View 1 (tube, rainbow, N blue to C red):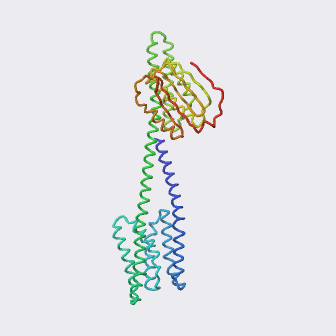
View 2: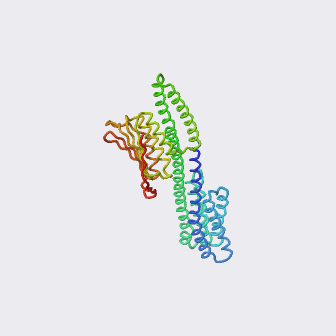
Amino acid sequence: MRPVLRAVHERAEHARTTQGRLRAVNLTTFIPPLALVGALLVAIDAETWGEALLLTPGVVTGLLVVERWTAGDTARFVLPCLIVTAAVWVLGVLVTDSRTASYGITIVGPYFISQLPRHRGAAALGLCAFIAAVGAARLLEAPGDVLGVLGQFVLLPTGVTAVAILLMFANQRFYRVIEQSREREAELAVYRERIRFASDLHDIQGHTLHVVKLKITLAEKLLHSDIGRVEEELREVRALVGDTITRTKELAYAQRRLNLSAELENAKNLFEAAGIRVRVNREADPDEKVNALFGQVLRETTTNILRHAQATRVRITLSGAGISIVNDGAGTAPLPRLGGLATLRERVGDSGGELTVEQRDGRFVTAAEFPSLRSTTPPFAAREDRR
């Protein structure tokens, strides 16, 4: 169904927009501080230009992986970057006595592990062991400084890597929850669209079938007394069925929009055909924003009155911000559940209005009102149409 496909497309567009915003947030959140910390570490630790040139690739590759991570495109980069940062760590320990050469691998390594399909725990232990082993190899160059080597080359970089791995796993879990939430939201949107489509289809065809039933019943009564009226009723039935087919097609292509004036005229004709007196009070023309909703309320209420009430009188009141339909013949017994009105209550509520349904003293009141429109619609002299 095209309405459902449209809802899916809109959700997909929304997801792409959200992903773009998340990437911008991640870029501004991670890249500047990581770049600043990396530059400070190189400036502090490097004593010569050669040492600076050795440490810089580790910082640059780490930033490259973070940038590609925000774009969701790291498959081609992460393994080469891991090799580069591992080489920088080895050379920094064994050649330049650099305590900060592990900076790049503490960024790239945890991310690489988080992308593995399995055995990530073993890979995390292996990475920490590699960093610790390379750091401990510094004892070959400085065997007398055991505590200094253990603290600065083994425990510190290994601990930072372990913390980074835990943070990466937590971050990955967070984004998985967000993705699941998006999927559930998309499924819910499709479900709501299906319910809306089914409700609209019920409004069109259920209303038409009930009217057809009334007109055929009337034609049967007049068959032997007024053949001209019978022919007229049958022509109206045919026109009504044709109109229903057209509106069903419009609904399938998401083009349907109810017109309140047409629904009002249709309701008056139906009530008259059923022998019900109807009075219409126009206090103001309804706002265009709610015209279609008021048409839906009037159509559903008309169908309910014809089906469930023994009404003799109906009063319809229109204002710029509301519509109310009052009928007698409601009786005292509780009415059956009116599913159409329950669906309309949700639609009106989603649009900022309120739909109330009340039964008292043999009367049934259905009213929809939008408080925010009360002050925006200019009043005029009320018009009354009696039938």
